[in-house]
Image (cartoon, rainbow, N blue to C red):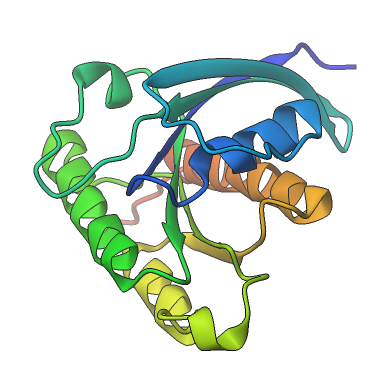
Length: 184
């Protein structure tokens, strides 16, 4: 087997959209019963995808709003971002847009591995404030992957991190592509 690849991923989003629940479901296979606001946690998990082994460090952040400043530690040395909103909260969707703008301001207009996640899709339809097509359209405008999930579903949570690894690899491969010129 190839050497273990280390990846550091940051989860960003409005308070109480389920960032910690998604991370804990993936890391520990457990859906938390009680809500406890997060200050910041870093979770580690070894994850095998195909023939490759990954050591993931998942930084679970406190919720952000449009006035939050992203610390430099969330900008440099990060391989990818999972931006989470709640499908039951249009405000959280607006904040997801703002977070992306802040990332672009801090990192520059470069390829950035991002997975946009609409969480809480298990809630009744009458609770929904953000349509799946709106999330998909936003992700496409960023050049990002998109998923709608419920933190209660372990397989969908695993898919978020699988998709994140795929996005990181896609961006890394784009830098490694050989550019050729031809003089006419």
